Length: 238
Length: 51
Image (tube, rainbow over all chains, first blue to last red; front, top):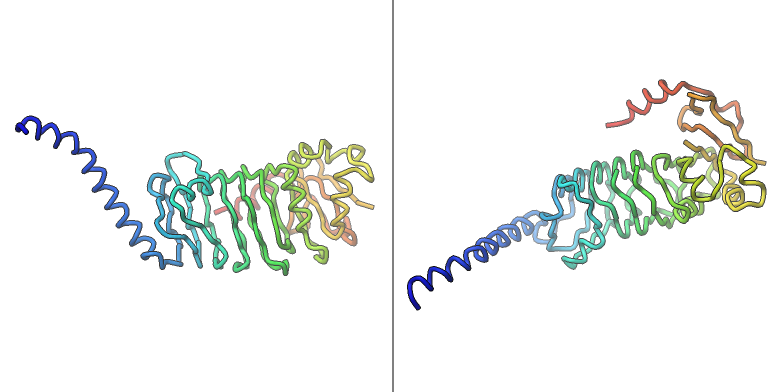
């Protein structure tokens, strides 16, 4: 092989060598960041990370997720966490998480899969303003959890199992019909003096009514019956 | 029977803890539990609750 040929091969491989080095460095960072798979306190763990950086190597099972995905993805690109994690064959399991404080504040995550909150007393998606879908939100059965969906201005889809027993304000959320039904079905039948708040336009669009015109949802109509199924709850519309 | 109360234009209804423009009361809850506040008062309250 001539010197020229050798130099050509070296030049062609330069990018591959560079990329391999970069990947090795990133893998090393993830190893440390995830504590070789042993990390459970993920407070601020992926705050301000981007989709390109977020290539987890180990399953993620936080015991604490305070600010975990805050300002996640400054590249202003929404991320479907379910699809993203499939690429890396890892799971995101919240079943042991007791702290959800601001865990998605200003995050660009648009979809979460199963979120099991049964280890937490407070469930907060505060300012998860790009979150559109929670595939499955599992709540405790005792109805003691508090909720914060403030400024979840994109939330349309949520399927709930468990019991809502405390005030819940979904007034910022443009929930679709199935999600509204899921929320109402989850409301505790034994709660007293509690309020569920919905966005007026979400209710009106979902059921084809005008909440301010009771003739549009007369006794026996779908929304009337649904609302009446939880007559122990005050319904507030904003 | 469901009792529904509505805030006047530019106002909000509150029981001191929850807020709404239109409120469908739970059984056993009195209309007297609710009072009106102005939009400005509501905005000020919401601001203090934000980060």
